[in-house]
Length: 198
Image (cartoon, rainbow, N blue to C red; front, side):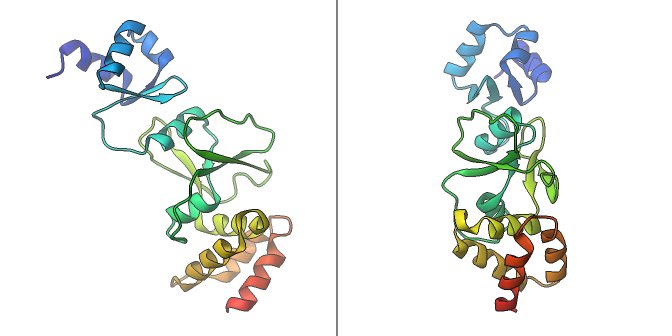
């Protein structure tokens, strides 16, 4: 059974908190590390902590959301999330705006830098159990990115994802082309792929 002091502390800190927030809540280092060593608190890296008995969540995604507010799931990771590929990526693909600071993360990540001009196009957010949502690219944006970067990511994945997307009722190739027009060299590659598949 939790003590009243621990219950009050949890109410002040929330499920996920930083070292700095723990200090402001008057949680001293000794007690913080005692709670961590007892397994009551999980260290997610970079001074981020989470109560161990909170709802199950992907702690890697929580760390990314907490440490890099603009980080956005992209490429294979986003395609897998949207059910457009069966592969389970070996690392989490995240995009950040080109020129931004690359976050240092404990989570296994592949960091991609995308042009600031197009970074927000097709960007949504999902709740991963952190204090802020994590960015994720839409299925259409993810398809365009994997097609335009197929020389780096592999064309097999790009074509598998595009085939699966096209088989879903209500999907319009015209919408995909309209979005692709906003990315350099993406529209031509997409049109060629659609000509083969349709």
